[in-house]
Image (cartoon, rainbow, N blue to C red):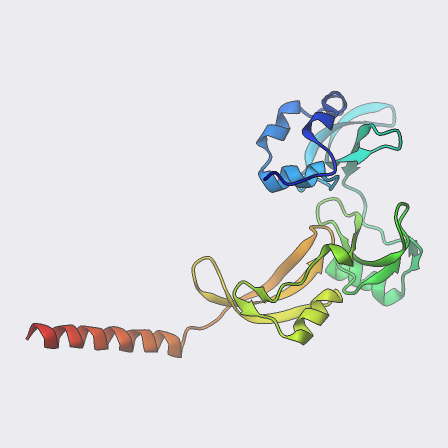
Length: 229
């Protein structure tokens, strides 16, 4: 079953894309999740080279793009170029404290949920983070993120789930990577990517578990020798 999106492929304004300098064939190169996000109106993860007029001169600049539904039902293209990092005094009805500005500038993440008033929709709790590629301030409703019971095989405690849902950093041990090796990391909801991010990775020492594996291997070898003799 195809995943339902806010906009369909037929609604993509390819003429407008080509006008900003993007080949219409780029959609066919998108991975499935990337395409679903694009059709849902989210910013592209990648930077694309687009046309821009600055001071009356034409330039090619890197930018993220997204589809935007207009009030008349049409679909347009919104360009998000790289901008200077700046935290305003107020954003969507929330006045930032000195500590909050520091968190956004240093960690690129507010580290908590705050009440915001969007242009469309009701006031409610949002996560806030800085897009690492464009330096934009990105809001995300807390209801978008569902905290799972387990992450990478590690069971989260009630406190860990509560802190993650609140936007805080949470240290989690005993996770299992693709190579089946255990690792620990710091987790936090990231509004810009709309997912739980991982940082401060640490490979957990095998220690006794490796010794136990060697002992089991030796025992198996000894048992095999006894059977043969």
